[in-house]
Length: 495
Image 1 (tube, rainbow, N blue to C red):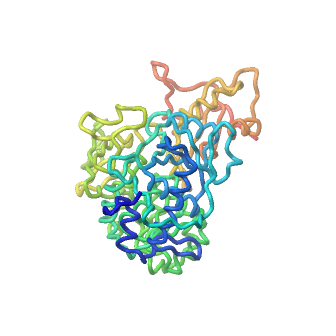
Image 2: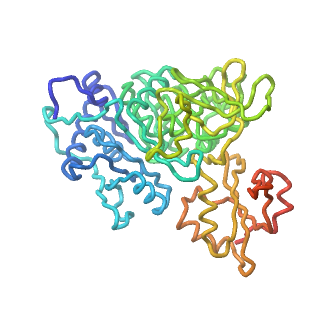
Image 3: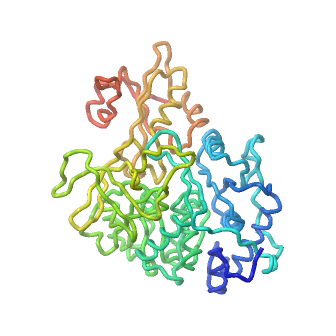
């Protein structure tokens, strides 16, 4: 319970320093930091009373809502680790994540969607019982404590848990604040899911910097455009697909109060940058990962015109280096794998998976190929691994291949990422069928739907008579990205 000591909780610190400053906005409602802290305490006491006292880690399965936002805040007041589940995954996929993280309790906005075998507690609507300030709980926000856990495909096929500490988040916040010159007068529009690092990091910036967050249930270009024109937000985070959807409805004069759109989530087409510039929309291309607690490089708006294609410069306290994997040169720059290091970057995965993703001296191997120009700006070239980034979502081909090959009509499968104007990349599959089977896309679709999130479904599936292979028998997937694939394709899988 609360003592006479200064609060450790970032939320309670803001409530003490800036009690009347706007902290959270939802539709037509606005809550100050003082009110937000009070309601977060109601959630903290609710979960303290309804979860086992031994619970240290809980998972959340919810869409964006004030109740989800307050649940996260309440759990952090209790000092609990919060595992965020991607709502786009199937039950099979997130059940694996719960088991892997040894998370026993799930908080959900719709308990009907949860199997009876999972211990589940409904996320309550706004609670009304006030908590006396003397009874405030303040057990969280220790720098070394795990604040959040998200799963990522990373650079291997098995999904891995990423434990992000408050210290990692704090370093990311400080770097972002300096990069965007953020103050307590800013309001960050949160249209991305809170279960993604790009969404959750906005909540955390509010708590440490003291800026306001306007939460949206989901991305809607019409709603967001009206909000931007009304000057309701000054900073925004989008991925390429959502920016692409916003531009057709954006005014040609741009938005008077918008400071910048932080743009991430995979490859950014030069044509998209040009279209945004034509609409006078200030965008900051960036590069980051779940493992880095949001972006670690960003390109200042003023440099867009002469650094087209760049993901920007390393943020404060972030180091980036290129480890050559080939002797290929790009003008004066050597292309190689991007290694990163800094206090915002996690130091391990849960259960010590893929320990070789870090060097002995602490550099994270990102699995991306790129180069640094003479000014130190980072340019991404391609994936060193097979990871596909589609609309900001990580997709690992091996996972899709394993699902496809479980089907009795399929004997072998290979999945690649193909460039796509809307999503950045999309998965494309090549399969071999048993001689006795004929398969249609319509017959395969229910099987895919039961096993894979929709965004992981191959956009196209081709039946091949054989696979190109190396001398050691490994499939030469790169050939499926060239015109040579016609030598192997028999026909596209029809409906």
